Length: 472
Image (cartoon, rainbow, N blue to C red; front, side):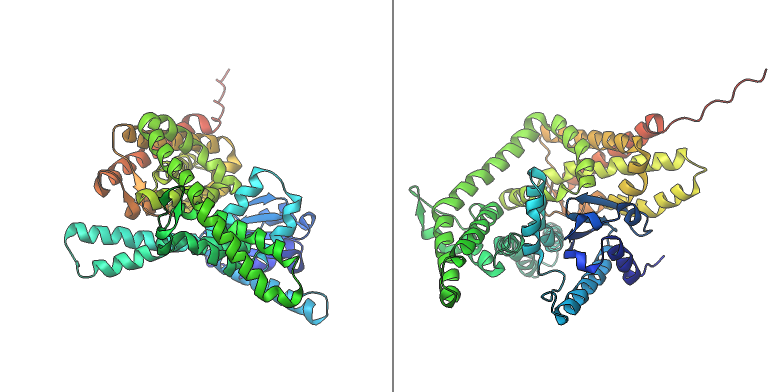
């Protein structure tokens, strides 16, 4: 059934304190992400009761409303429009500066960050930098995989250079986009963040010598770009607060780019490159020496991360591995969590034959679950029932252990891009023994996750009906 984005947006806004209470509107693949000026105005129970809302994750002034793929884009647009109209009306009355509902993300989150502390805040803000990049990562990754298939099949060889250029261009310049988003998230000028981060990928850095060796373009990757843009934001704020207003337009950008650029060249790129190398080395060592155990842990714990909305914070690690090795070996392991949940949901469907409403929910959410979008099954089936969420994690752990075990035997499975999982990840699969071997191992992991998730839920995930007492 087709939903009305405008009515859903109105319902959401009414339950979060109205458009005036929303200071930031963004979205990822499945979630509408709102920053609220007054978190106490949020009606959690009412918001969860909205039919189109699949789940809710609240963390202080930040609220993630799970709506699902496709729906979230339309509702976000309607919410942002309503917020912008409310801001314009307040500005016309002299009460506020107009906003588009999106552009104030950096400054609003900067103010609200005073209400949050700890690792979770840092992970959320890093996720805000990388989540907007996911559509491009998916599209370029799929094109890269398609180009590889065509080359292996000996077809369209004349088109291959064009496909390669289209697929590779974004990754070659991803540092610039990371810099722009980092500055926006942390309250700086986006273009200055992008300008400093561009130093990381500029070919001319090969002429710069640091610690007796020449730098390499791209050294440090997205980690270096993130650090450079963070530094640029700090320098910009420091300079802007100390120069006369008449000189701000000249001195602030010049000093920001100069100081941050020099520190990036002579410190951050080298340090970030060392960290990135360590990440790649650690991932390879972990899989080759303790792959089954690593897969067990990663596959078993990923669903709780998705539930809390923290899984996006792993994007920098995936991106670093892709830039180093051409693929990330972690995503296929983590994708097994979705397989465990699919198996658990199927067991619930079989066991609860008389619960027509729940079975309808499973039928509607299962296609998305098979394609790697887990929120509908998490919030609509497994989490409300309690134990099936745990048995789904067991299925994910088993699937992860399966994939990790083959990594110990010498067959690694990787993804050339991030975003999809489940069946949708097949076009992006590759590995040290080619796409065919990677796809076979990954399929075996999915099957293991389905079977263990189903069996664990069928046997232990739901209470059995009491046996009728014998007649006396």
